[in-house]
Amino acid sequence: MLVEDSPDIAAFHLQQAIEKYLKAFLTLHGQVLRKSHDVSALLLGCIAVDGSFASLASVGDPSEMTAFATKYRYRNDEEQEFPASDEIASAQSLSVQTQVVVEDKFADLCACCPGPTTDG
Image (cartoon, rainbow, N blue to C red):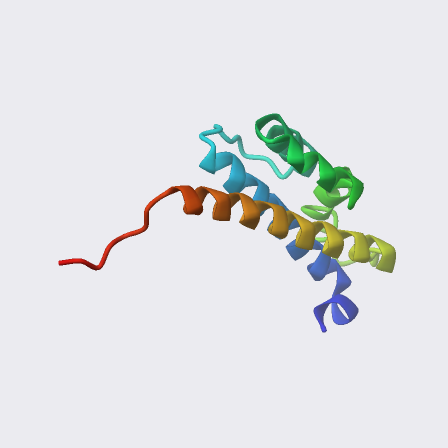
């Protein structure tokens, strides 16, 4: 399993999942995005659009997730630091909860919109 074998890579990919979900939500709502890995800023942007995103702040530390974007991804070969198991667990929880919240928001949007018809 990636978490046990390569926790540094797992941390990076968990951060990326959180970042991309938040960016997808913001994009859906017409927000202009700047190039950034800052999960805290993205989460604040989502909260400004929809206050229910505030619940994610209690799941994991967004600033800790931001560090995962570069801390383990771009280290040099001499560094042997790896994320702690509790950091990975927090990232996994935040990733899953972010996915749930964003997918719910997309489902709400899709429920309001008529889908394509197959009528000829």
